[in-house]
Image 1 (cartoon, helix red, strand yellow):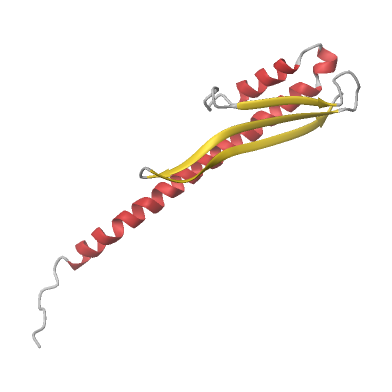
Image 2 (image 1 turned 90 degrees about the horizontal axis):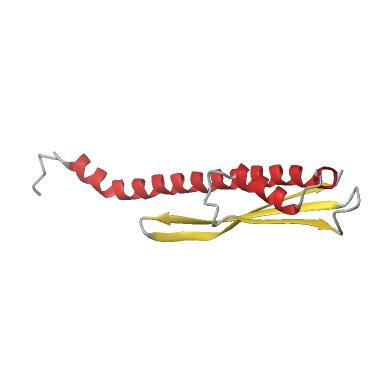
Length: 130
């Protein structure tokens, strides 16, 4: 049996075969990091909105004031896609009632034109009216 004496280029061929897999893996890590950053942003925005909402009874504001606080805290996200809900249970007039601030934002993990996962990120904060 003849033996191959020249193996030059073997590492290059192996690298060319492994490169697409490594590139997709790297893009996946970047996409997941992006989704996690968006989740942290909406969680912080919900916290800021709930803090503003619990002061509404004392400051004479409205739920739209809390919604504006959420939108200001989520300045890095697309405001047209940001969903904000501010509700008091059962009403805004009594101290001790719960205020629920829910923030939603869509996400999509796209690897080279192929959507692996998509949906909505949701964060809810509950505080008591002061």
